[in-house]
Image (cartoon, rainbow, N blue to C red):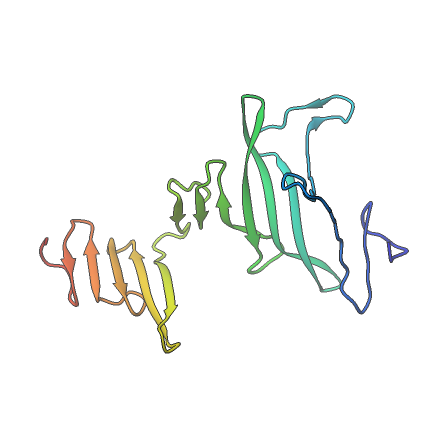
Length: 193
């Protein structure tokens, strides 16, 4: 629609304006809504079979035009994880492209609701990890005070020293705790509290 040379089975194309796809529902019942369904099955349409674990169920891909072609910049993928009582379980991944031609998974939401950033196997409600050996993980929390000034606090995990730092800058020493439970406030930990 809007192009004589579609790249896929259905392509909406617009020039010099937003190209919108709108699904509208009008009702007085809170259980009725607009639905976009992406579905996948093994085998054929006539004889569908259950999906396998880690099959992609659907994908939303975001592309930009570079080097004489559209290139993938980000994606959201839904995967089958398993089956339970006749219901399909699944997980979501969110990917970005930092360099090169392929997206890399950056975040995952498991079937149980655990969120992993930098890890594909989040063990807790929120798990932040790194696949790079020796990589320090920094988390930044910001908030504005009543006057509008931004206040920052960092949580830093240094795997080489096995210490957790809390401070106003990454790896600052306002509060330091090592793996032995020793705590230092303003200094390196020397004894347990």
